[in-house]
Image (cartoon, rainbow, N blue to C red):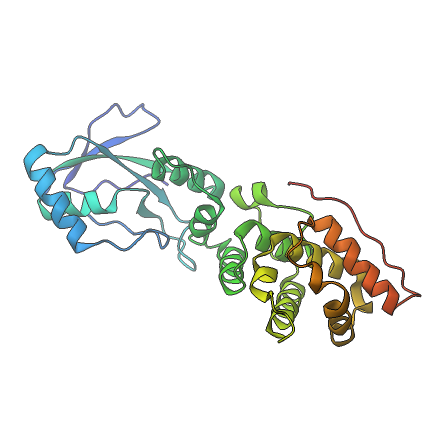
Length: 286
């Protein structure tokens, strides 16, 4: 669907161009939707920008996407600003004309890719930026919101939380899938159970280095992979007692995740000699 040009907007490049360029002429308000992931505008910031634009003008070009993929339950097309909300609010408040492109995109990955390219001049997007952006896409909102909340609630990085939620362990990093809009939550209950058991270990008075345990990424990886390997044979109450006797003294050591998994499996197998669980494969980035 093509962008419906308002009466106070004119096209200023050839109609044959794949990237239509328009100019807002001022007068009436310029209506567009704000992406949920965009930061709130600051009155102080707009005030400073107003002074600068009044003195020097603004020669930049805004970029909008015209799509029906970003508002849940609404199949109508809307105009969304990809970057520069402080600048455009200032221009509208000053009634100064500005130039803008309109991209018609219906693919979520393409929309977020354009957002990433426009929003990080001199600073590349990290995983959390992609997650924040994909929460704007109606079809992806549930999975990416779950990922964001889990990461915050359990103080895990986005990549680690994504691995656990998607795979049920931390051997697959999932970073590329997160950035491409392909991330899916498959093991939320398992991920919560693993994270809560780690918190239970940290709350024990005998865990004199509990802050170090929680900060120790390698231990967290090793523990989650261990839980995945032993499956239903795990008994947290029994294992926790043995854990403090044989593993906690090593908590400040420089063991890597695979070493932690082996140590934890050794403890588990002593408690369950008939299970003899074995360590699975190494980390793979997908």
